[in-house]
Image (tube, rainbow, N blue to C red; front, side, top):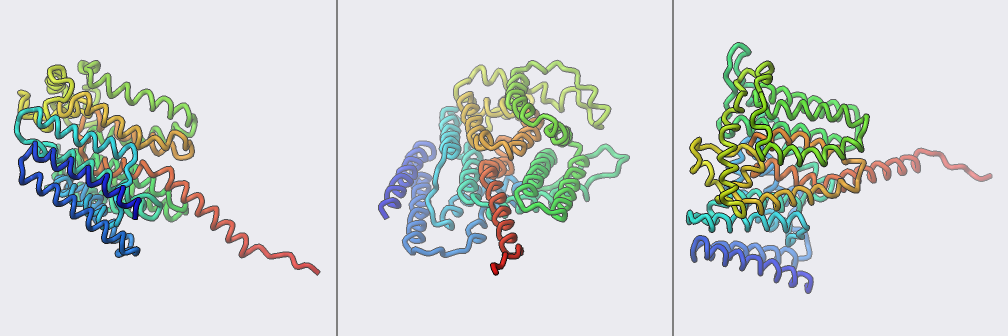
Length: 439
């Protein structure tokens, strides 16, 4: 009881702080709503914990995260619209207050910084402008709280794969004939985002096959699912997604030759590539060679090479906290976003926001540093996302944040699989090995 009172006092202080910040940003009514929602959540958790029983089985407690994981590939706008409510409901159903680790605290810091940046922008939107940051990061924290063992981890991963298969089916069924140059259209999601989600689903599928007990049937099923999604990616004609699949396949082949060297190269090369591209060192590289493999003109990456200089100038003018979330597309002459992870974060939340985002990602993947057995899964995810980070919008993707939350527990979950297999082997040996009978 004392432990709970201490946790409740800490969580309550956070709720009151959020209410005060809401008061500054939106006025008294919003502050009252935020505070009431937080206090109701605390009371509900208190009732569940004081009952000394679990009111709902674990599948029910994961329903909000399952909803987010299922819809993240096909309808990210709906997930972000209700993301904060889904996260709060997850905590209420779990009957436990959040146990915040370093990635969670950094996520809270980034959400608060997005709010502060929006307030400083002078647009008067406050929290409403940072709502997508708040929703995405809240889902990240909620998923980390519940997907902590193999059973729950697999349930979220399989749900996400199922939602991605629906997107793959829509992309394949709506894809035009080979003789046309049109791309498939999915009503609820941008086709580029759909392709990025499918790339992520391919990686999640391979990881899920690794986490479960290995069998020929399961591996064939995983390869079949991944192949279907890879075919859907090819039909979308999304350059970054196609390149991501190619890079991932190359890594899976090369890593067996030099696993440790590949990890070190990736750890150094990926940040260097992200920084140099964002800094403009490759803006004048001739990309016409890509036209031989993709049907669309790639000379300017669909306007990306034209908008990046405006983004860099905006960051130079507002380096500390950026322009504020979602302001850049309304002020640059091309009226589009930056289409680059670092540049988008820079114009939204400044260099401080970039540092917080990088810190979240690094600390979430830190368990792989001491677990070499599963390190290739972290490298595979990073390499698959590298082309997406360079030319796409992925910083607020619910599919991305749910995946990072799953990856933060992946080494521990994979080790649980190993321990289960070892236990099963010992039990089988004890049951089936005949005992010597003394005479």
